[in-house]
Amino acid sequence: MYCQIEGNFIAVVRSASFIEHRFDQGEMEAAIEFVDEQENTGKIYFDFSNKIITGGNSAGRKQVEVSMETLGKIGVNLSQGAGAIKSLEGGNINVNGYRNDKGYLNFYVATSKPETKIEEQAVNNKLQALFGQSQQQPNQFAQQNQPQQTQFSQ
Image (cartoon, rainbow, N blue to C red; front, side, top):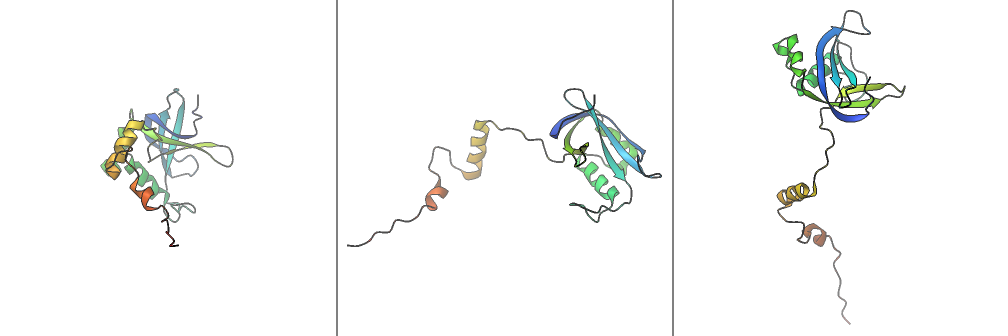
């Protein structure tokens, strides 16, 4: 069955390879097939063409540049050859499932980690490290921002 998860999740890479571009003759793509925790599959495609991206944060850049950059962020160094993409197989990958305006569910590599809740004690430890005070002590920042009381003489 095909993966239907929207949002960030962790999956395992089943296969990673280069394929003929699905839409543009003479071009190529990298294809990463993944398996989610319910054993459903999905694919992420990376365009390896010289097409210029026209919108978004990568506007004005070539598709191949963005694909190389993203693959690099997940540990694929293609300067070692095309076979380097196989290093992803069997490993975990952070995936983002996004349903576009036409209703199609597309998958992307999420270079950020999936949202993970932190236990209360771990939060307290992190706050202690950040501010050097425990939660039981008064908040010095809150005290500093209190309005000053003005005394009027009679």
